[in-house]
Length: 201
Picture 1: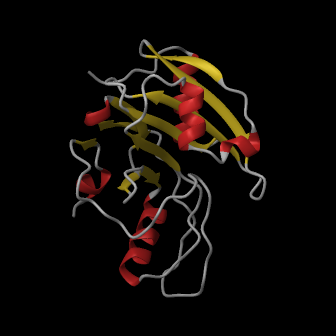
Picture 2: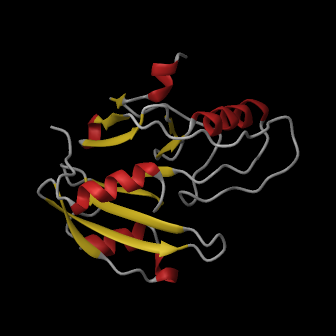
């Protein structure tokens, strides 16, 4: 598949795609063992941004133009610099495991109860958050109520930012999550603070 295809800037359907890598907690590395796959130093993020649109859920996120996306078997979408992306492809081909550099993800949780409070939905679908007991801050997301919350992972000492919100039809909980200093999160947080983060039509 070509460069533009792997970028997956516009996903119209996420059915039928399965990768061998599972997503447990976004932005955290996995255990490593020796193998044929070797990870190069992560490639610098391009200064040029490109819109990544997930049409079924009405969300557009700006990502560095040289970054690649992956659709996980869980339905979550992760974003990686080209060197990390190539490393993950190698792991998939060989069946090896390896330590993946921190990344940003869009977590997708379908079939939610729309009558529940937003924080209750988040705690139900991301129950490990109760360990960190983060403060939840309401944010405006294109006319819909979203929630931002941060925590520092205890083991990796990595500050993780999270923005959770409902899809326009109210049936899916979406969470943009990743290291606070990751280029994608830096841009997303800046646009939220400026009140201009928008969902697509």
